[in-house]
Image (tube, rainbow, N blue to C red):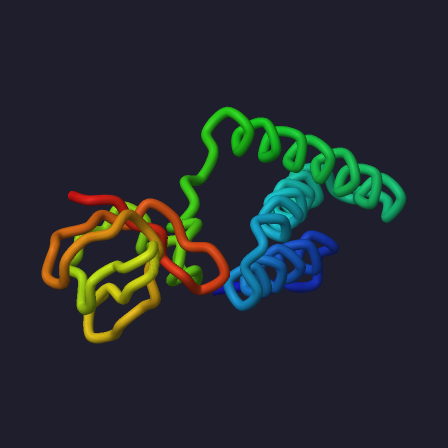
Length: 148
């Protein structure tokens, strides 16, 4: 097997495509992959058209980068990646809608509700201890409840 192709200008573009692809895996940002694609296309053109001047290689890389980024942006606009749970790190917001039991009666609009293995101060209509309530909001660390 001959390794003569490594001395060709296209080899540098192959190396650039591989390095950009590896960098995309190491630091994902969905951008370097488009530059890696442009470098790979430039490598193929460099091998197909020999000798291709450096200026033409750089123009090819710039044009294919623009094309790849444009196509990629359109793809992600038309087929957006679904995000994770927007309330993942907002424990209070995750409580809204949960049904629980009152730990202590709500008297004059104030009481405590058992939530999971904890207890939260609660505001709502007067209800006896043990009543089932639905959490409708969380304001300043106090859950607002209604009868379930």
